[in-house]
Amino acid sequence: MADLEARTELLDDCVHCGFCLPTCPTYVLWGEEMDSPRGRIQLMQQALEDDVITDAMVGHWDACLGCMACVTACPSGVQYDRLIEDTRAEVERVHRRSPADRALRGLIFAVFPHPKRLRLLAAPLRGIQRTGLDRALRRTGLLERVAPSLAAMERLAPRLAKTEPLPERLPATGTRRMTVGLLTGCVQGAFFPAVNAATARVLQAEGCDVVIPPAQGCCGALSVHNGRAEEAQGYARKLIQVFEDTGVDRIVVNAAGCGSSMKEYAELLGPEAQAFQDKVRDVSEVLDELGPVAERHPLEVTVAYHDACHLGHAQGVRAAPRRLLEGIPGLELREVAEPELCCGSAGIYNILHPEPARELGDRKARNIVATGAEVLVTANPGCLMQVATAIERSGHPMRLAHTVEVLDASIRGRAL
Ligand code: SF4
Ligand code: SF4
Image (cartoon, rainbow, N blue to C red):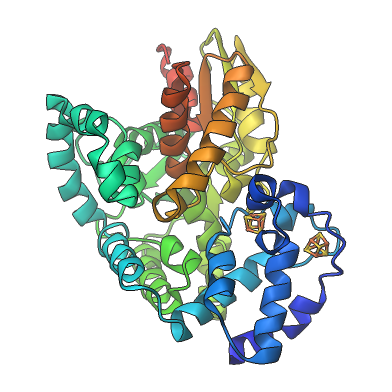
């Protein structure tokens, strides 16, 4: 357990004060100490002292959403993000999971970090959605009973439309102010191509040449968040290579989970990744940094903004997206109660743990609906899928959009 030993100092930072407990979604749901950040840290300490990892320990660590609300809440600066990442890597190295768990994880990692495979999957999914087969299957409840994780995947899939791939380079409108590279992402690229298209248009309108290398693959976020460090390193190295000779000033990311991992590449790969990491920005940070030059047309709409955990807690980006939305004439921004609580998406958590994810999704949907807003805006494909499903269940239909889609509509003078 060499990695855990190296983390002794990090573990000792926890003074067991419990300030993090009310912000931890699993503690809020179950009220169990061992399903709180403090409890999980105590289990890490125990694993280190006894040099053993039990099934029960793995269960409590697996149940953690990795939302990092505890990192925001902790007054002692405990780096729980590093602790849980290392612990998960150690679990994958030494712990034998059940055959069913191994099979499900194998399936997820054989598909999700592969943009081409996801795009291939999107084509038949579009057909199933068009014929209404998805709704018919859902009504039977069969998949839910036989394979709850597959049922969760089916429910989460957004309505898919066919779109053209983006070209390799798009020129700035007017004077060029910056050259940026755009990460198209795995889930974002396959399930939300309209968000990538809107991101490119907004960046162009704000004076950016946009470079979109077609050979880009996964950033490694899903792998690193699930203890598959070596796999994540491979993806990260390839992504750095793809952007290496593009001469871009910034690498723009519109998926919060990807951005938070890419901002930690130096930790994953070592100092040689520092230069790349320093260029990584969420799209809202770049647009906020540039300041608006494109005219904003009015959008008479009320918007509830949901902080994606990997944007708010992990990257500390909360003000920039709000400033951008508030810069649109006519738009009224409303805050969602319990903003620190995760919506239950958390990468692949809602597939691996569909029940607590559903409870958290329903709680988030209630808080969103209570704002009375017409549109829910968030900046992560996972949150968009999770919240859309929960809002549909709530029986209070509502439009959903990524921050850049709202800006794009305003800049183009179109309805949202
Ligand atoms: S993680 Fe931080 S907030 Fe939570 S118990 Fe430890 S010191 Fe307190
Ligand atoms: S990362 Fe989220 S779910 Fe995990 S312990 Fe921290 S607050 Fe709880």
